[in-house]
Image: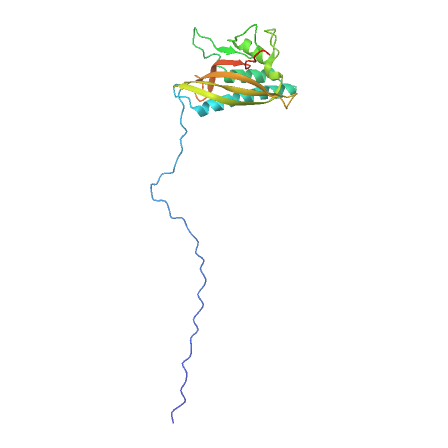
Amino acid sequence: VLPPAIAPARIATPARPLVTLSAVAPPKPAGAAEKITIAKTIALNDPISKAEVKTAVKAWCDGIVAIGKVFSEGGDYEAKALEHVERHYAFGEIPEGSKLLFKPTLASETNFRSDLDGTMSYFVGNGIHSEDNGFAIKPWSKVRFDIFGTFITGPTATVSGLYYFTPTATPDVEVKVEYSFQFVRSKAQPDQLKMVLHHSSVPYSPPN
């Protein structure tokens, strides 16, 4: 008699561990160079751009507000005005035989100012010219501007437009003034523009 058939034993297969795959950036090829951005160095004779002109006009407007703010807070507004004037006007960079040409809005006796003292007198009324009451220490809470147009020839740029001054005392009023600026690059810092001409006047008002 044959023995009963014996089923073969089943061998248990061990469970495989789970493996989590994560994305790994491929290595850079050997010798690959890093991307480096190099800022362009501006030279004295580089052409001035419209963007630079707009930035310079805005900085002048903001500077007038800043002087008035220091004045209102009882700070050293003359030092702030000197910083503004030296930053935006080309004193010390005018060729021999030439003059800086500044025609302030509210000047009728000493109509033009070509030196630092006369310009400071207009902005802060330091007594050099009796007609000066200190334009920047009125003060103004806001100065905005429009650009009518620019004329650029190489490293010289001329711009004309309107700026609007808001007195701190009457925030619902704007004083409209016409301006023309002519900029050159600073010899000391060619990336900065400085004025060699600034003409400012109120619009013509016809008689009634």
